[in-house]
Image 1 (spheres, rainbow, N blue to C red):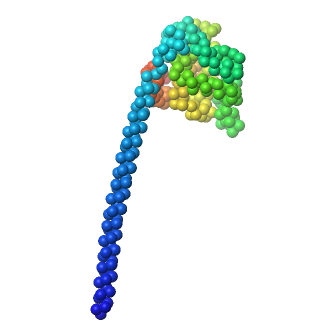
Image 2 (cartoon, helix red, strand yellow; image 1 turned 90 degrees about the vertical axis):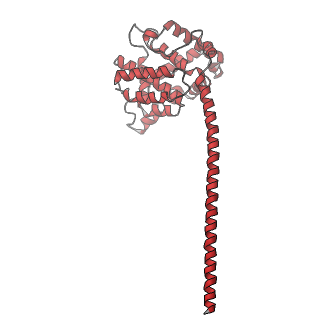
Image 3 (tube, one colour; image 1 turned 90 degrees about the horizontal axis):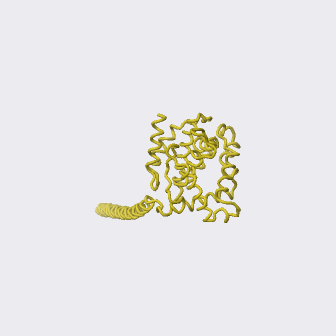
Amino acid sequence: MDKTIRYLLILFAVVGFGLLGYHWIGHWHTNAVEQAVNDEKALCRQRLEQLQDRIDALTARMDTGPPVDDLSEVFGPHLPTDTTRPEQVDCNRITTQVAAFFNYLDGKGYVTEAGLEMRAETFFDETLERLAATTPTNVGELNNLYGLLRNVTHLYRVLGKDRLLLIKQILDEEGAVLEPAMAVIFSWLTVCAEGRPVDGEPPRLQPLYEYAAYFLNTMGGRGYLLRRDSKMRMLINYYALLTLDMANEHRRNAYGVDIRPHLDYLFYDINNQRGLMYRERYLAQLAALRNKYF
């Protein structure tokens, strides 16, 4: 009997010490885990602060835009603006700026170094001619897989690998002057086009409309833009909407592309995009289009 009681006491003691040890180890483990989590949180906060400092520094650099001297070297003494309204465009100045821009590209040697014996303006004209001669599919793109694949690879098929690589090189290396260059060239093509009658339809409206519809309204065109950086994507969409508005004005919107769904999306994107030279004027133009169509 005494032996049994002794065994029971030993058993209870062992169980008691075991429970006490388990509780102590559990408490220690909980404290260790909490300390590790707190250390990791502190490290994450430190890294986030460092990243935020880098983001703020990059944002400040982007918001400054290219120096004025750089633009004068590219476009001449008169700095370009983003206005595309015919009554506000000085075509003599636009033509001079376009010529200066192509001379600037010639001076950089992009075209000749690519093995093409031509001026940058000739390269640009040939590129436009190729695009106009073979337009993308804007109706029935999804009728079959072959048609969809052709639309996805449209620019590659029409322009070719070497020409596309040269265009990409120019866009990458001249990103600082991309906005004013696009504004000047768009006005040159639409408002100051040679042979355009007063208040008449721009001669190049039809091919411009074909590609505006392609980028705004097809899987092939939109997929292409998704592979570009956000700034390039927004600018192409912006000028596509201006082209679509122009097509509506001249009753040339043959595919019936609805401009309205795109206006709010682009307004939101541009409103939240840093580093745009003409950001406020883009937003004002989009707001005017929204008032016009809603």
